[in-house]
Amino acid sequence: MKKGIRELCAEAEEIVETWTAEEAQAHLDDEGVVFVDIRDIRELWRDGAIPGAVHAPRGMLEFWVDPDSPYARDVFQSGQRFLFFCAAGQRSALATRSVQEMGLTPVCHMAGGFGAWREAGFPVEPKPRPGQ
Image 1 (cartoon, rainbow, N blue to C red):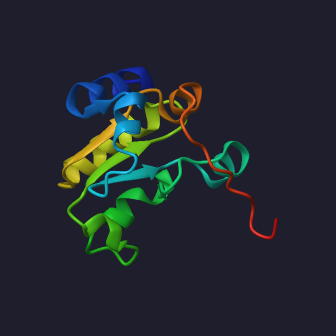
Image 2: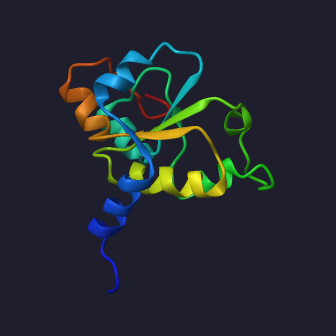
């Protein structure tokens, strides 16, 4: 293997802007910042979510961001700042690097991810499975 996940994440961290959970929380009610949760839907069902966050599963993110994709989502064409987060901050570092390379700006990710957010005692809302 030429590069492992540690190296890829370290490289991404050098390139992308990173916010702490505290910095992110200070922008929770900022209409100019879109919180983007890239965790798998089962993680949201199990652990809850940051109130108001947009769910964009990691596997579809680049397709949702690209305005020329048949899967494009309008939210990513809004010109707002996007704060990406996952469970612990690794997937979001890689995702933020990817969308930044695609030309989406301004973007950043949250160090420590949802785990750091929850550990800091910031608001979390349940995300029950459909039908529950």
